[in-house]
Amino acid sequence: MLALIRQKHPTIPIGLLMYANLVFNKGIDEFYAQCEKVGVDSVLVADVPVEESAPFRQAALRHNVAPIFICPPNADDDLLRQIASYGRGYTYLLSRAGVTGAENRAALPLNHLVAKLKEYNAAPPLQGFGISAPDQVKAAIDAGAAGAISGSAIVKIIEQHINEPEKMLAALKVFVQPMKAATRS
Image (cartoon, rainbow, N blue to C red):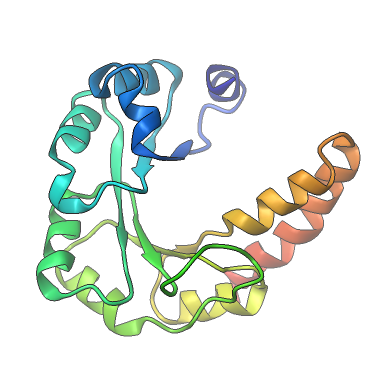
């Protein structure tokens, strides 16, 4: 499926959010080789902390896939430096601690983390985790983030209309347009 998406849309970035068990399944290097083959641009392995990431990030870089790292809201200076050093593509800046989901609104702003990440030349920070409304996107941008990620809200729309593709696309458009507009205001 990813190869078809890449073929149809050669310039749209394709990023995966994975858990380590899926990467380990066929071997770390083979996973990233497959990612490169189908045109994946980046992979965030959510349950692998920076300090244990060497085999993942090395395989990613060997196969021209950007390793993405999570920056938690309580990151200390050492962790921020590691994220900046090892990450490529973008930095996933967590809005708050806890579990994801649109029903749990993001805690904003995170200006201090954005400033530190920029100071350490990290990949551009994209704020995510509980982003479900245009005002949150605007606040993230105003705090210096390069963008915002709204995964759970998108997944919820897809789940609601999984058997009705036209309604799904219409609902996604209604959701995405004001979110995108908030990046420009």
